[in-house]
Image 1 (tube, rainbow, N blue to C red):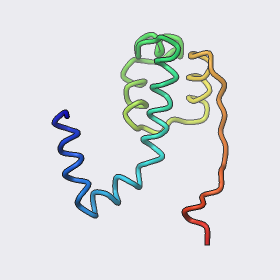
Image 2: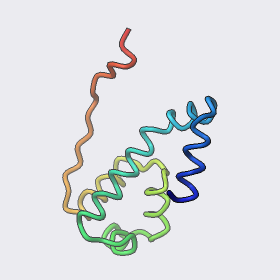
Image 3: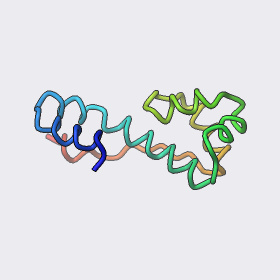
Image 4: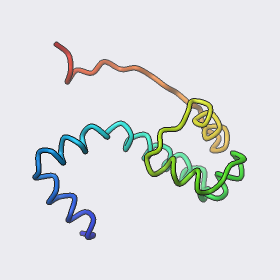
Length: 96
């Protein structure tokens, strides 16, 4: 297990850390989805940036959790030959 994974496992025992981590769940999921799309297209961050007419550091920020605009998501979809699909699904965990 890597050091960061070991630390994460330890920190998850702390209720405040766990709540903060859980609050970022959607951001982590979006970042993972973007990385997956880039990887599936066989692109490096630099190659994706080139196709998007932006910088590699901008792609790294997005993959690191920076929330992109819809326009940026559209550029990523086009650059990775993907279809952008945004949906709202019932949140059964929050249902009254």
